[in-house]
Length: 350
Ligand SMILES: *Cc1c(COP(=O)(O)O)cnc(C)c1O
Ligand code: SF4
Image (tube, rainbow, N blue to C red; front, top):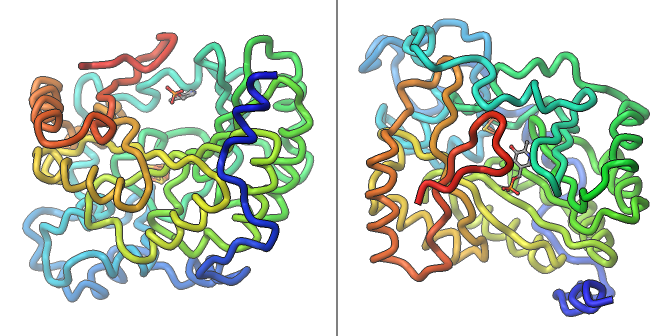
């Protein structure tokens, strides 16, 4: 079969286990140690909440959560830091804005069984974890009713039986929350089940953990992915929005994943005041490519309640893409897209 031949040409992991910078439970320790709540975050950055340049949200329903390793990539004493702006809750989140709603992209309408979204013909999105390592204020799923997701070891029975019968689906996109927030044992059960489905050729993860919590890329995970890669293509779409998010720790994580034969792509959300200028986006693309990660999507912000202050007009996004084309090789220019309810694929804006 042609496809099998293609797989054998993917980089093969060596027989010996692939080394990583991290031990088995390091990431769980890093999570216990994460910064929780406004005061912990601001204290870490030596900022005084009473001096905030604009009104902060007291006790957001979607609480502030930031791993220390990610907070270390922020500039101390700088309210305008582009990484801080992604996680600091502002009072503006509570403004009601026309056209911004709780289910802006129609996720609920495409939910075929709890936690499974079948919106596009060839691929099905499976939400396997409700948790994330970081809480991004612009998150498109911040209002998703995660409480209804299946839980526990046998929680995915309905998802598996749906997938067994899903004609034309050859790819599972693991998402959440963050799918890598599951521990290795739980993930292995899911990967084994997915690998038993004959029609599935590609296993894809949508995860921000290689960026915000690189210690998650431990040897257990990497070797499990290498094994899955023997029979399936394994793709990982990470999520970075600003070049400052990439450092030596993310480089080591990306390198371990690439040695395991994982194809690495990145998605970025276009965010007002954070990355909506051509130099920042070009630097982000360069930093990604330098770590072996290809820019995949630049997303126009989904109009989810509480995120209006992050929106950049589409016309400006188009100018930015035009400028990226002049600055970068073609492969480093992401596709500028928007997700719309009821469409068969993300809509290209270029
Ligand atoms: C974005 C998305 C996918 C994957 O889309 P690609 O264009 O293949 O990256 C799959 N399912 C849902 C529901 C999505 O939102
Ligand atoms: S990591 Fe992704 S899913 Fe989690 S809060 Fe951030 S944007 Fe949302």
